[in-house]
Amino acid sequence: MSFKYNLLKARSYLAMVIGILIAFSVVLYVEKNSQDIEDSRVHITSSIGRPLAPTPRPLSSEEIVWAKAAWQYFINNTQPSGLVNSVDKFPSSTMWDTSSYLMALISAQRIGIIQQDEFDTRISNALGALAKLPLFEGKLPNKAYNTQTLSMVNYINQPSTKGIGWSAIDISRMMVPLNIVVWNYPQHAAEVNKVISRWQLEALVADDQLQGSVVDQKTQAISLHQEGRMGYEQYAARTLQLVGINASLALDYTAHLQFIKVEGILVPDDDRISQKDGANTFIVSEPYILTGLELGFDLYSSELAWRVFKAQENRFQRTGIYTSVSEDHVDQAPYFIYSTLHYADEDWAVITDKGERVDQLRQLSTKSAFSWYALWRTAYSEHTRNKLNSLMDSNKGWYSGIYEANNKINTSLNANTNGVVLESLAFIHGGRLLCAACTQAMQSVGATDKQLK
Image (cartoon, rainbow, N blue to C red; front, side, top):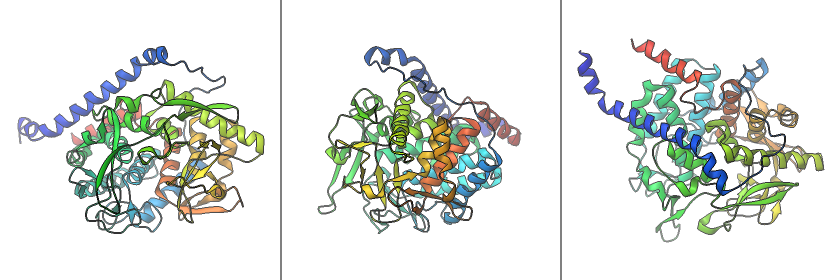
């Protein structure tokens, strides 16, 4: 067939790629040129001793072993549907958890612990599954799905014909792996288009803020509400920029920024009231470590992330307790916690999604410690990561953490923990994972071009 015929046949694919290229270029331009404007609004003094972004380096043989153990979780929990269980042997997943799988898959390929053919098969199967998901109100992905049947479910994996709503934060995170696939693995770009062309992404934003939907359990009424708090909403808004969706108020760190002193460090907090719009206001590591690993730090996120890290180090200096906290799965009720630096006038509170205190479940978080080890590479981050060696099971993956109260292992095995372990190691190996212009990305595209000729 002629080149002209093939070009016409591929016109929708080319249009999609060009559109994403333009959107990504706008993001890069805005990030490059916004720092002076931001500085004129809010002055945040840079911390003395904050390290620069570390230079990528080859992984050690021990780090490769760590990566293979993390990947084993995904081998064990991949369903025939193409999706992966969010928790070991529990056939359910959210968009956030599925993003963790896709980021783990990308990381495993970049580290070199899986071959290209396995990557291609897995990414095609996952994208094929995402393209078939029934959507909430026909607009956007439901908050949870059964990984075996691809049907909508609630958070305890019970069938839900109507669905339980959508999460703007969860769906926004999916934009990171999907953009990486389009940029670095363009042979799968058409499959990505089949996924996102069904999603009404503009519904994720209202009044320049992120918007989620909720179904009332009693009345079944559907309501929309602002979603996201400090750290999370900026991360999500940056990811939506990648596909041309603007949430400028959510993107602005200064819109609701206040500082709270924790362990002598002024750390970023949100000035909004907890449980307003159904959201808790707390400080955890999660959004800052994902911003650094996946998107790369900018002017604000680098400084704020460093302060979040230093407060945890200062707690260790004061108490002798190794501290690295975030949101995590746990192996007992309530099964998911937010281990915070600060919540409701209390430092180091641990809460459920309803704001109930469960401080006895505070733990040294595997994914948090791995992330800080990758991002800052200080003596404390290295020593903290070394405390995790007993949490690796080469046949199962990495356990979620170590409880402070009794020094017992939190035996939860889950996609988020093992995904972030792989992301952290891929960051050490090659830098931030979303990198359209980096050498690794250019090599990947170049290799693809050669295969097509």
